[in-house]
Length: 135
Image 1 (cartoon, rainbow, N blue to C red):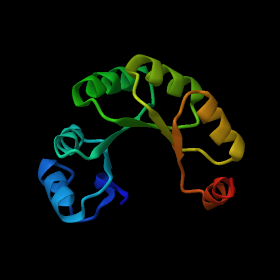
Image 2: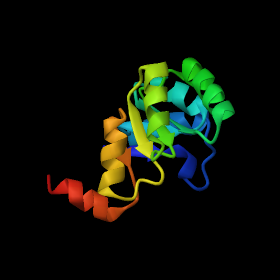
Image 3: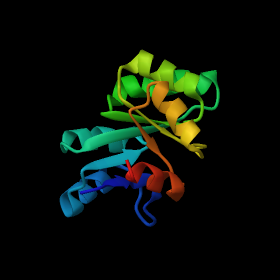
């Protein structure tokens, strides 16, 4: 079983109906989205819900924390994940496990994010996958 990033599935609108369809047809382990309707429906269906938030400034932090209070996801993916002080703040404010993503390019970036409180990392850097696969 895998985690599906609902917002990146071409031809499928990121909403509760799409979530219902994905859960029935594919039975994923989890769903990841920026959309509140997807997160809330995933939780209703008993699927791990990962809320993705983009923290570009203080206003985005406040809006995201309000959204997280509403959706109550199982995990939060914080972007950019290289902003370690932001990872620590979101974890402190929500108590929800954090996935750090975006601008995670080196082993040092991974270690900094984990030390800041991230539970795990999301990255497209295959060399990092390979590095941690060996451990």
